[in-house]
Length: 182
Image 1 (spheres, rainbow, N blue to C red):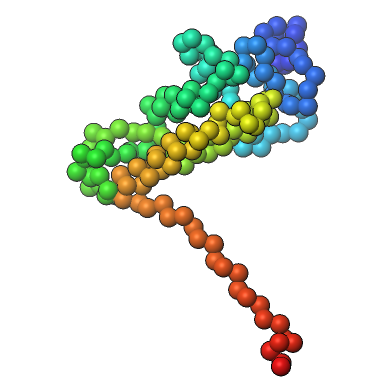
Image 2 (cartoon, rainbow, N blue to C red):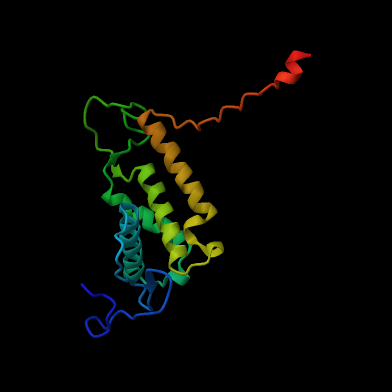
């Protein structure tokens, strides 16, 4: 399918760029075809970017990516929660803090922290690949980092699993043979 040609699809415009995906005024990505095949990561990043751009177009009022802020990204993450598959127990649930509850409960299904973290990483990279300035990247805001940390901590408590930060082992000190011989 030729998405670049104006004769077949006038909605997209062909711009000369080093980026394989360029934004038009409607914030719809245009994918140029190439000889090389994309990796699974690149395909997922492109799908995530298209989904986010579609979310912005459907937003009331519609937003362009240039006017998107960290608050809009947080709204997007809350919107995605309705499609989650991870059971996250509420504080009042009798199974709160149990890693393997013995029976079903009415607690909501949400997006898992790891999925959200990976999604934000892919969108952050896609934003910069599509001409965004790293300093104004809405996917790297402090509020978003705090939100992801809070989601991680709450989901860990709700499941009774702790996310411990891995500690780096100190490098062993190497003694030289010259000082050992003295």
